[in-house]
Length: 208
Image 1 (cartoon, one colour):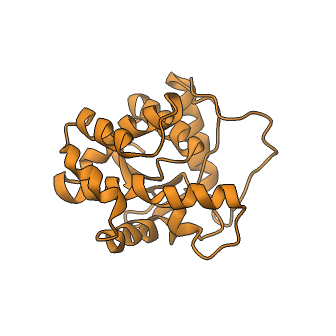
Image 2 (image 1 turned 120 degrees about the vertical axis):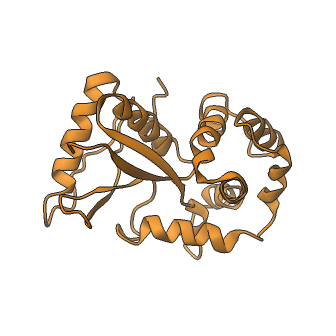
Image 3 (image 1 turned 30 degrees about the vertical axis):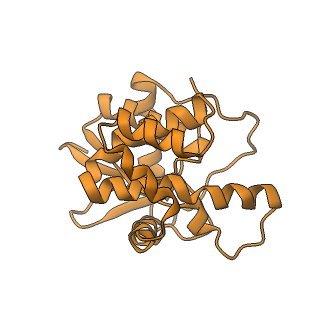
């Protein structure tokens, strides 16, 4: 990319791997000519109707709250507020180990400069149509056998998009190391017919 470009990331606040990827992308933004735009997907939507272990099913039931709050905030104050709201939510969920409850939502909304009353959206399905639309916009180009993070980046042609799941990395690279990873990810993801690189995970999420 020679000109500054917009790169979209779809996140669910629940996912620790998406959180790490988002922190990496914010590092990439400092060393490459791109701006990160955050969008909402939902693991709860993705896993609807699937046979899940009981513990994960309970998590998916609770997972509606954070994404509903994000959608309500974006609809009320504009999608650009998702950057700060995601940071406020993710810091509390992954670093401070908050429960997924009203305290989490009101504190995060307040930190992001938003109306804490939007926390009520967590238990309302009134914006689920908008949530599903955002989710589907992110997932359609990559399919439903992946989760989050999903990234859409400008392709080599003016109207083309490179969409992919990942990268899954821990901890988040910093500085030029973040930029080099971006260069490599974009190279392989932009290769026609390229689908997957994978190896077994030996480390859990490192929130460094």
